[in-house]
Image (cartoon, rainbow, N blue to C red; front, side):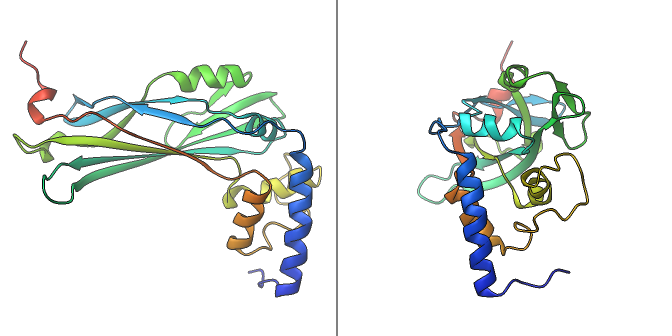
Amino acid sequence: MRSPLPAHAAGLHFGRLALILASLLAGWVPARALEVSVDRPRERAGYLWADIHLGELFAPRVESSLARGIPATLALHAELWRRRPGWFDRLESGFDADLRLQYDFADDAYRLERSGAQPLVLRDLDSVRVALSRPLPLPVGRVGILLPEESYYVAVSVTLKPLSVEDAAEVESWLSGEVGQKGGDAFGIITGLPRSLFDAVRNFAGFGDEHARAVSGDFELRDLFPTR
């Protein structure tokens, strides 16, 4: 395990990395706001499924980092809440999913990966946008936990992480011109920084996370099984 950097060394690494990342962002256009909306859930095979819709996904700074091989992660989080008038609403269940996007230099294409599913190979960012513009269904809970005559809603949050700690080793390889090579120590700058310093450098250089949140309309159990 790598030993923590001394305070003065961490400061030097912080400054060096901040200058490197900031120089890469010169002339980039300010980010547009990430957008998300969520439909009222529907029942399927005993589960509640809510479709989310994403918009304004890739600001110019994110496009530029993706084109250079820097991975980005979309973290999706959905919660099912029960309204309790006169009291705090009750969280009934939740669901998390991550979508990871990275440009593959070997295939000259983008790979969109999700745990438990085959990756999508897409030729360019326009194709990625088309794929992510389709409704994304998320299972937010079992229908069996819903109580008759009670009111519920779904809250969804989306976080776009253009640069995560988990991807730091790959970023180091990219910074040293060794894109696609795994296992190299490269600069050793990022992985030698404490997490708090890493986050500070990332945010200072413009690689900070983007967040969006949306809430569905209220629904009851009977709304899932309308009379035909």
